[in-house]
Length: 315
Ligand code: TXA
Ligand code: MG
Image 1 (cartoon, rainbow, N blue to C red):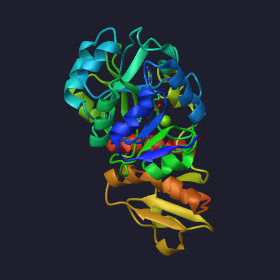
Image 2: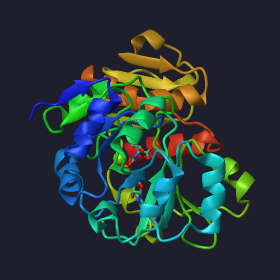
Image 3: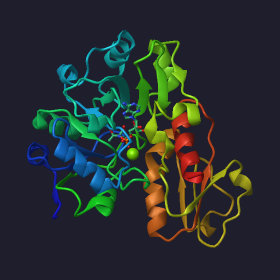
């Protein structure tokens, strides 16, 4: 299959309407979308990505009115979070409507929904006229793509269309919050932090990672975010010594910067999160065999960033 690469949201939307897959930019990472009401099209996502069939996907909407076709009802907690954080890097888990094919949610009775805060994504989703179900646009297990070139690297020839945009702003996937129980629960950390959520819902909880969390958040059990190189978490960069083909990313510079094959010093945690997946891919291309990542404090965006780094380090 030849993959059409375009900058036109309306051309890309035509592929969705014809039951083909489209990779598109969002503010978090690039997504790989299909018409949520077209089962055949959704099946193609699993093939293109090599995705396990028990991993549910997120529905992307351009307008609040589209929620009607996706859910049976909107719980009060979800409504408060939607009012405050849509559009933006937040996914809310809601009760699923029968109109959504169960393959989209891996058979779950719930569905994750989000409204991206990205001009091209919004134009594209509006032109599609249906909600678009989309996981991240990478081969399963690889770091999520934050540039269109990363999507091309993984999926060229496997999808109908790639809608080009800039490098994504956030660089980490959306925060996922389960709103189907009384108390909202964060299943995946992201740029909408626990602190942000608690401003609206003070009782919001963080899911325990581990076996108990698995049934609620199937995606979290899979190997994720991994570059080919070994990822090593580094608490004290001031003592770090470069080895043969090693790389470093962090907020503070290690002593002998020039001895690293690849190095990225980030001005703040936002830049660190924005850069991490791209840096992983660059390191793979450069043939790096160990990537040292400076540990950051687990608060605010640091929770999401350390979650991704820890998963990459212990795949
Ligand atoms: O930022 C994002 O969320 C990106 C962009 C493209 O929107 N998408 C993304 O999708 O990261 P994906 O499929 O790579 O990750 C979706 C995560 C998985 O961990 C999955 O298990 C969880 O959300 N999820 C989706 N639907 C769920 C549901 N109904 N119940 C529990 N977890 C769900
Ligand atoms: Mg993913």
